[in-house]
Image 1 (spheres, rainbow, N blue to C red):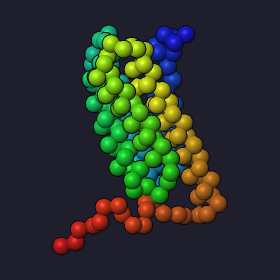
Image 2 (image 1 turned 90 degrees about the horizontal axis):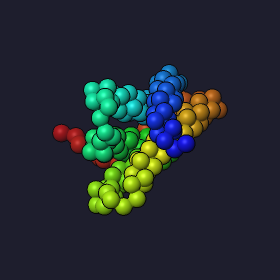
Image 3 (image 1 turned 120 degrees about the horizontal axis):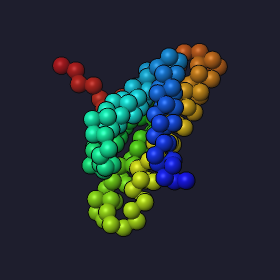
Image 4 (image 1 turned 180 degrees about the vertical axis):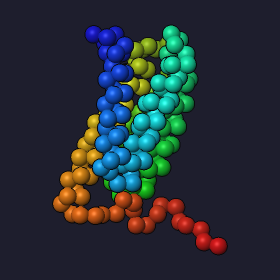
Amino acid sequence: MLDLFLDYGWALHSTLMVLTGIAMLRLGGSPERWIAIIGIGWVVVAHRIYHHLAPGSAWSPTFHAASDGFGLIMYLAVALRANRLYPLVIAALQLVSVLAYVAWAIDHGHAPISLPILAIAPSWGILVCMIVGIVAHVRRRRRLGSYPDWTASPIWPRVSA
Protein backbone atom coordinates (compact mmCIF):
# COMPACT_ATOMS: atom_id res chain seq x y z
CA MET A 1 0.00 0.00 0.00
CA LEU A 2 2.82 2.39 0.87
CA ASP A 3 4.57 1.52 -2.41
CA LEU A 4 1.41 2.35 -4.36
CA PHE A 5 1.12 5.67 -2.57
CA LEU A 6 4.81 6.47 -3.11
CA ASP A 7 4.47 5.61 -6.80
CA TYR A 8 1.27 7.53 -7.58
CA GLY A 9 0.75 9.87 -4.65
CA TRP A 10 2.96 12.48 -6.31
CA ALA A 11 0.44 12.85 -9.15
CA LEU A 12 -2.42 13.53 -6.73
CA HIS A 13 -0.24 15.85 -4.64
CA SER A 14 1.02 17.78 -7.67
CA THR A 15 -2.49 18.17 -9.06
CA LEU A 16 -3.90 19.38 -5.73
CA MET A 17 -0.94 21.73 -5.21
CA VAL A 18 -1.42 23.33 -8.62
CA LEU A 19 -5.20 23.66 -8.17
CA THR A 20 -4.77 25.14 -4.70
CA GLY A 21 -2.08 27.46 -6.03
CA ILE A 22 -4.37 28.69 -8.79
CA ALA A 23 -7.11 29.38 -6.22
CA MET A 24 -4.60 31.27 -4.07
CA LEU A 25 -3.44 33.31 -7.06
CA ARG A 26 -7.02 34.26 -7.95
CA LEU A 27 -8.52 34.78 -4.49
CA GLY A 28 -5.61 35.58 -2.22
CA GLY A 29 -3.75 38.63 -1.09
CA SER A 30 -0.06 39.17 -1.66
CA PRO A 31 1.15 36.55 0.88
CA GLU A 32 -1.19 33.94 -0.61
CA ARG A 33 0.10 34.70 -4.08
CA TRP A 34 3.71 34.35 -2.95
CA ILE A 35 2.95 31.05 -1.19
CA ALA A 36 1.20 29.85 -4.36
CA ILE A 37 4.14 30.82 -6.58
CA ILE A 38 6.57 29.03 -4.27
CA GLY A 39 4.34 25.94 -4.02
CA ILE A 40 3.67 25.68 -7.74
CA GLY A 41 7.30 26.37 -8.56
CA TRP A 42 8.46 23.80 -6.05
CA VAL A 43 6.16 21.06 -7.37
CA VAL A 44 6.00 21.77 -11.07
CA VAL A 45 9.29 23.40 -11.94
CA ALA A 46 11.70 21.75 -9.55
CA HIS A 47 10.35 18.24 -9.12
CA ARG A 48 8.57 17.60 -12.40
CA ILE A 49 11.35 19.01 -14.58
CA TYR A 50 13.92 17.04 -12.61
CA HIS A 51 12.00 13.79 -13.07
CA HIS A 52 11.39 14.61 -16.73
CA LEU A 53 15.07 15.30 -17.39
CA ALA A 54 16.20 12.22 -15.51
CA PRO A 55 13.50 9.59 -16.21
CA GLY A 56 14.00 6.29 -14.49
CA SER A 57 16.77 7.67 -12.32
CA ALA A 58 16.90 6.83 -8.65
CA TRP A 59 15.32 9.21 -6.19
CA SER A 60 18.03 11.78 -5.53
CA PRO A 61 18.16 12.91 -1.91
CA THR A 62 20.77 15.53 -2.82
CA PHE A 63 18.55 17.24 -5.39
CA HIS A 64 15.48 17.06 -3.17
CA ALA A 65 17.42 18.37 -0.15
CA ALA A 66 18.60 21.37 -2.17
CA SER A 67 15.10 21.94 -3.54
CA ASP A 68 13.51 21.70 -0.10
CA GLY A 69 16.20 23.94 1.39
CA PHE A 70 15.48 26.61 -1.19
CA GLY A 71 11.76 26.22 -0.53
CA LEU A 72 12.40 26.68 3.20
CA ILE A 73 14.25 29.94 2.59
CA MET A 74 11.44 31.23 0.38
CA TYR A 75 8.65 30.18 2.77
CA LEU A 76 10.52 31.77 5.69
CA ALA A 77 10.90 35.03 3.79
CA VAL A 78 7.13 35.19 3.31
CA ALA A 79 6.29 33.91 6.80
CA LEU A 80 8.37 36.52 8.60
CA ARG A 81 6.58 39.42 6.91
CA ALA A 82 3.06 38.12 6.24
CA ASN A 83 0.17 39.26 8.38
CA ARG A 84 -0.97 35.62 8.56
CA LEU A 85 -0.22 32.65 10.80
CA TYR A 86 -0.35 29.78 8.32
CA PRO A 87 2.89 30.72 6.46
CA LEU A 88 4.76 30.09 9.72
CA VAL A 89 3.25 26.61 9.93
CA ILE A 90 4.20 25.98 6.30
CA ALA A 91 7.78 27.07 7.01
CA ALA A 92 7.90 24.79 10.07
CA LEU A 93 6.69 21.82 8.02
CA GLN A 94 9.28 22.58 5.37
CA LEU A 95 11.93 22.68 8.13
CA VAL A 96 10.92 19.13 9.14
CA SER A 97 11.54 18.01 5.58
CA VAL A 98 14.96 19.69 5.43
CA LEU A 99 15.96 18.23 8.80
CA ALA A 100 15.06 14.77 7.52
CA TYR A 101 17.79 15.16 4.92
CA VAL A 102 20.23 16.34 7.58
CA ALA A 103 19.46 13.24 9.66
CA TRP A 104 19.83 11.06 6.56
CA ALA A 105 23.22 12.65 5.77
CA ILE A 106 24.43 11.90 9.28
CA ASP A 107 23.33 8.25 9.23
CA HIS A 108 21.69 7.09 6.01
CA GLY A 109 21.94 3.42 6.90
CA HIS A 110 19.53 3.65 9.82
CA ALA A 111 15.79 3.27 9.19
CA PRO A 112 15.75 3.65 5.39
CA ILE A 113 11.98 4.27 5.31
CA SER A 114 12.27 7.30 7.58
CA LEU A 115 13.68 9.63 4.91
CA PRO A 116 10.85 9.14 2.39
CA ILE A 117 8.25 9.50 5.14
CA LEU A 118 9.80 12.54 6.81
CA ALA A 119 10.57 14.20 3.48
CA ILE A 120 7.20 13.56 1.81
CA ALA A 121 4.68 13.81 4.66
CA PRO A 122 5.34 17.51 5.40
CA SER A 123 4.47 18.40 1.80
CA TRP A 124 0.96 17.03 2.40
CA GLY A 125 0.76 19.17 5.54
CA ILE A 126 1.85 22.18 3.50
CA LEU A 127 -0.96 21.46 1.04
CA VAL A 128 -3.49 21.30 3.88
CA CYS A 129 -2.15 24.59 5.31
CA MET A 130 -2.46 26.24 1.91
CA ILE A 131 -6.09 25.14 1.62
CA VAL A 132 -6.92 26.24 5.18
CA GLY A 133 -5.04 29.51 4.62
CA ILE A 134 -6.92 30.53 1.48
CA VAL A 135 -10.27 29.58 3.00
CA ALA A 136 -9.47 31.62 6.12
CA HIS A 137 -8.34 34.57 4.00
CA VAL A 138 -11.52 34.58 1.92
CA ARG A 139 -13.72 34.32 5.03
CA ARG A 140 -11.75 37.05 6.83
CA ARG A 141 -11.90 39.37 3.81
CA ARG A 142 -15.66 38.80 3.53
CA ARG A 143 -16.12 39.52 7.25
CA LEU A 144 -13.68 42.43 7.71
CA GLY A 145 -13.23 43.84 4.24
CA SER A 146 -9.73 44.80 3.22
CA TYR A 147 -6.99 44.14 5.77
CA PRO A 148 -3.19 44.45 5.61
CA ASP A 149 -1.27 41.74 3.79
CA TRP A 150 2.05 42.43 5.49
CA THR A 151 3.01 43.36 9.03
CA ALA A 152 3.02 47.07 9.79
CA SER A 153 6.48 47.07 11.33
CA PRO A 154 9.07 45.25 9.26
CA ILE A 155 11.33 42.79 11.00
CA TRP A 156 14.26 44.20 9.10
CA PRO A 157 14.44 47.99 9.35
CA ARG A 158 14.49 49.90 6.09
CA VAL A 159 17.70 51.68 5.32
CA SER A 160 17.22 55.22 4.11
CA ALA A 161 20.00 57.16 2.47
